[in-house]
Image (cartoon, rainbow, N blue to C red; front, side, top):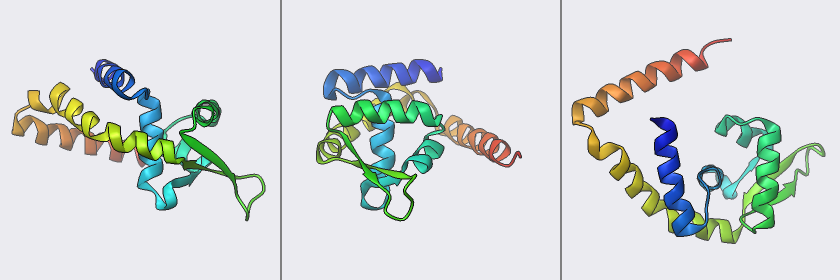
Length: 133
């Protein structure tokens, strides 16, 4: 179900805005942060991605002008990823449709009770998964 929903929502983003689902995830996290930027490692952790996957994806997004890399002044080994103006514009344009797609593809098919139960299940799984060593 997850893969189907991500695929459908991603197809809509790609067709309408030229963004992949992964592009949207990256831009959403960056634009939620202070100054539209995060350290690479922090972004990888938030997304649940391997560092190499993030590095390759950020390189592709940089070539397209969606993000910029910034060196970290206080840590020569670290780097920031920042939403570029084009990335900020893209996520601002795509977000309303993405919200509509999630509602249309997923939420509109659930009763209020199912939505509540799903939230309880998700909270339990997240709690148990993140509390393991």
